[in-house]
Image 1 (cartoon, one colour):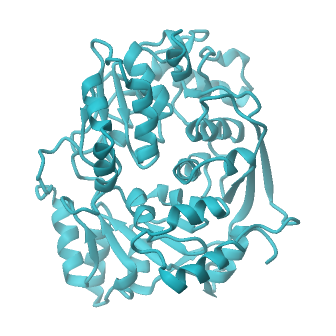
Image 2 (cartoon, rainbow, N blue to C red):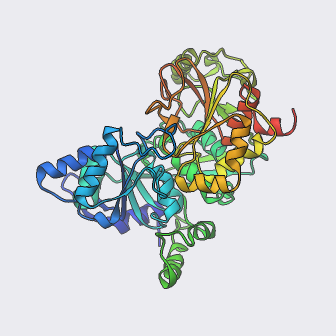
Image 3 (cartoon, rainbow, N blue to C red):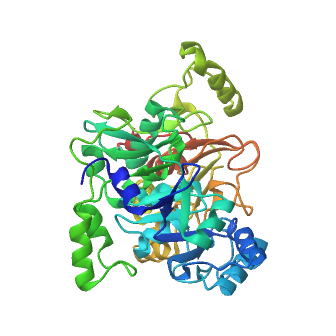
Length: 466
C-alpha cells in the first residue's frame, strides 16, 4: 500500500462521492449513545425508514447515567434512556444496558469487546469517537442529523481531510504516561493545530505504549482540533485484541491478523502537516488554563501572559481570571478541592492500577472529595478482582459505577460551584465539570498524588517521598 494509513482506510471505505464534493464513507460499526439516538430514531419513524444494518449498530447508555446510583439501579428515571431503549427495541438495535455485564462508556466498551478492529470504520455521536483510532480504526464523531443518516444508510458524508503526523521524538522521563504525552503534544500543536486534519501518532514513545495508553492518545485528537486520530496497528494491537468476544476467531483471526500487519503508512508517505514533540527527559504535564493546550510541566509555574505571543495574551489572561490564578505561582502550591479519576480518557484497568499504585498506604487529604468511576462494568469487575476498589476506598475515594460521570458534570455527577478539581478527563473548559468549577487535567497517577497532598502534585515526587 502507498500513502498514509488514513488515506488507505478512507479509500477502502469510500462508497461514492456526492455532487457537493463530499465522499460517502461506509461505516463498518456504529455505536450510538442516549443523548442523540432518541431524536435520530424519531426522524426514522417520521420518514418511514429503518436502521439499515441493525446487526452492525449498537446502543450505549453512558452520558445520562449517574455513577453515584445505588447498586442495581438501572437508570430508568432518565427520559433519554427510556427513549433510547424504546427506539432500540423498535428498530432491532442491541443495547449495552445499565446493569448488563457489557454496560459502560461507548469508547471503553467497543474496544473491550473487540467490536472495533484494525482497518475498519466506526461512527459514534460523540466527539471522542476517535479513541478507537488507537487500533488503526477510521473513526468519526457525528451529530444527530449525521447519526440519523448512518442509521438509515450506513454511510457518512464527509469532506476529504488533510493529513497530519505527530511524531514523538526521544525518551520521556520515568513516570511519564500517555496522558502526559498527549497534553504535551496539544501544547505544542495548539488547541486548533489539527483543524481539518486526520492525525496519525507515531514515534518510539507511541510504540512503547500499551493499547490503553494509545487509546488515551487518540481520545484527545479532538482536543487538538482534529477530526480524527489513529495509530498504526502492530503486534501490541494484535495481542490485545486476541480472544475479545466480537473479534474474529479461529481461521478468520489468523487471516485478519495477517492483514492488520499490513496496515501502516508507507515510508515515503507525504503528510500535509507534521509536528515533532521532543519528549527527551520530559516531565509529567498539568493543565493550568481553560483549554487543553494551556499546559506546563508539573514542576513549573503558572505562565505570565506578558511573556506570551500577542495572539495568545488575551486568551491567557481570561483563563487566569477564570481559574483564579496568578502568574508565577508554582503549580505545586495550588490547593485542590476535588479529584476525579474516570471518563473515556482514563478509566480503563491500567489507569486504575496506575492510580492505585500511588494511593497504597496513603489517605486523601482532609477536605478533599475524591471520586473514581471505572469505564465499564468489565473494568469494574476486573479492578475489584485485583482488590483495587479496596485501595481506593481505604484511601478515602468514592468507588462509583461505570458511566461518563464528572467528565461533563451531568446527572448530578458534578463538582460544587467554585471548586478546583484535578481530573483525568479530556476537557478543562469553563464550567465543564459544573458551574464555576476550575479543572486541571492530569494523568491518573498525578491526580491520585494530588488527592493525597491536597494540592497539585507529581506522582513521582510523592512516590520519592519528596
